[in-house]
Image (cartoon, rainbow, N blue to C red; front, top):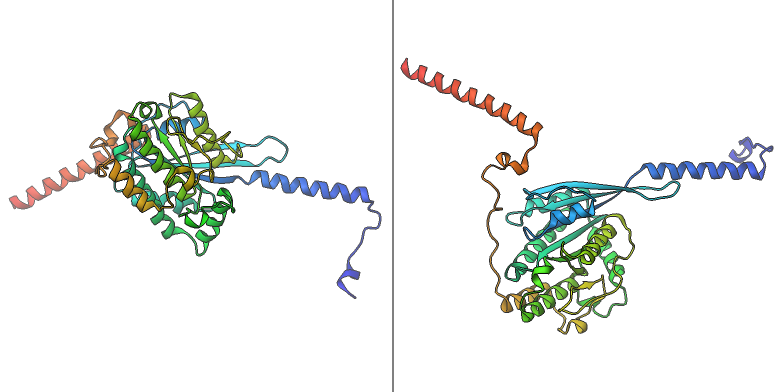
Amino acid sequence: MSELNSMEVDTTETIQDIAIKLVTEQQKNDSRMADTPSERTLFVLGSKGVGKSTLINRFLDRDDVPRPTLALEYSFGRRTASGQGAQKNICNVWELGSLANSSQLIEMPIRSHGLGTFASIIMLDLSQPSRLWTDLESVLNGLKQAVAKHAAHGQIEEMQLLTVQRIGKGHPDLNTLELFPFPIVIIGGKYDVYQNLDSEVRKHVCRCLRSIAHTLGAALVYYSSKNSSLSKLARDTMNHLGFGSPSNPFRGAVFDHSSPLAIPFGADSWERIGVTPSNSERIGHSFSTQIPQLPMVDGSGLPDDPAKDVGFKESTIDELRSQKDDELMYVLKDTEIRMKFEVAQ
């Protein structure tokens, strides 16, 4: 007897009964999906003191007073969409405090969460044009090395296809670009100070940032914590990358160097920028010729012992450390007494 014939069939079931079963099963599946969080990872790095922590706090709706970031800090946000069976969304947020000697730290977010749902915010200090390319080059080199080291076989090529979709398969410059495999948004911070700089300097900065954002397949926005509309755009952009909502944070595009730039993914072109197709190396060389760059400063400017700084107090950790310090001092004194005794003998 075949397997089909051996099955017991409930001939008393009506179409309505079957429909109810199907709906019930679907609701169970929706419930299981809602219980399984959807995670994305957002890595914020760039110029020191540009306001990365402040921007992250606003993104996560936190009122914490920002303090200097030691090295690499982790936080997260959680949101649940409205509606029955809504899925819980989690955004892992990493912040790099200093670019000096940071290659191993830059690897950590990618190594921890992978590249599948990874995005990066590169935040640069517009008020210091003489450090802009130095900081940007350090970030890009660190990200490239981390991707090359931790990407799975074939993953980069697959994700670059998503980048192509993001900027548009029919973009006329597509074959001249150096696309990153994950979304990047370059945020030019401290626009309130930058807008008062010399017009020629702002032209050079604008051309450089537009060119590098275009060749990477990145979006570009200017930001100031003192400007509500710019703060909203930056926050909406982070929400887009971290939670997928809004689906498009840009209401339009602004290309004028005398205004705060707001350029969505794929909206720019070499022709619109007014330059010939280029790559990141030539873009950096051109900008550094126009505005000489200062070298990367060694050290992070942190106190000699951050644990003793009032800004980094953690009562539980400080208590345990104090206990270990006391134990260490006891061992050192005991060893010193023993050595003196042995010498005396």
